[in-house]
Length: 249
Image 1 (cartoon, rainbow, N blue to C red):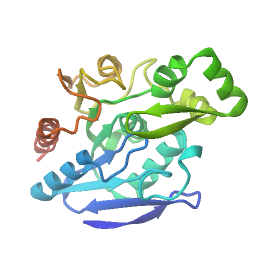
Image 2: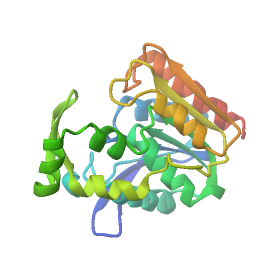
Image 3: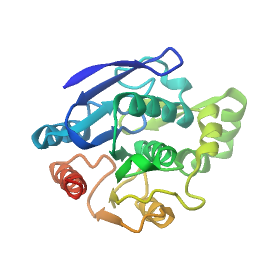
């Protein structure tokens, strides 16, 4: 596995890991406050190494091993990070795999380079979550604090409370995708647990409805939770990747 850093164009070093191999290159987009060392990423790395397929893992600015501050990150800035990594470190067709927020970022990346997208996999994909799952879930008092102070802190099941900034919310509104057709025409597979307490599984149905591709399947895992990182969840992910890359062998 190769590793290194690439400048995001604003002086921030983005950490990446890469496996050379046959295309389409599998690119993994982590979720909000997640990184490229998680179970899904490492499972994909093992699969691609076994298959001799190309793989790219990376961390957004303010995440994992990359530089920068999480507190100033936005959907737009993380999309630009992802675009720098994808365009700078890959060639040819891509299989984009996005987890939670990564599903939104991967959608934006796909829309900007549709000719390169060979397939798309969402894992509890969370497009538009800054609006529908953050802003709309806030109390009047929280919204007032956000607008006047620029930040509120939300509790998390996965660690310390995390900041939600006014910039994150306002920037997110310029990247919403669920209001109309989403021009991705490659095969799409959307995996979602029905026990997900962070992102409702109905979001994947809404995303499927918006996608212009005619080859879209939603797989619901009745007892699956948000992380989708149990052995059986990872086996489903590997089988889904294998299906899409072998279709293009």
